[in-house]
Length: 125
Image (cartoon, rainbow, N blue to C red):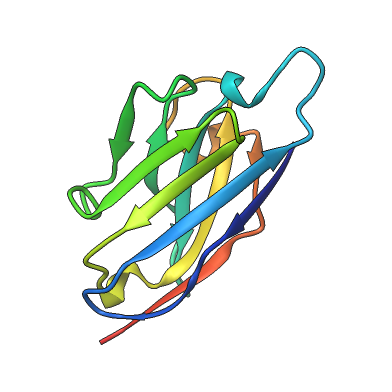
């Protein structure tokens, strides 16, 4: 499975960005809709942390407390895309953001089977 994240950039505090993640190359017997999708981030000098996840069906979402109410995860199974709408951005949101795919439902990065390459988000104060 290949995951390609995009949409990062430099934004002022209070601004918005929309990250996208395109998926392709699923194993035989599986499709994009088989996988729950997660977003994680890693800031310099810090461990990778969970940001948000969306169930394979799109019917359930979950957010880290630090982003709840500001970020929204969504997916389009027909287009094999997952999105992360980030509003009211703060300098502490600065990190490399990764999308990942898992067969199942998990907040833990070690559970995820496939990872994208990451996209840099920088929020200036």
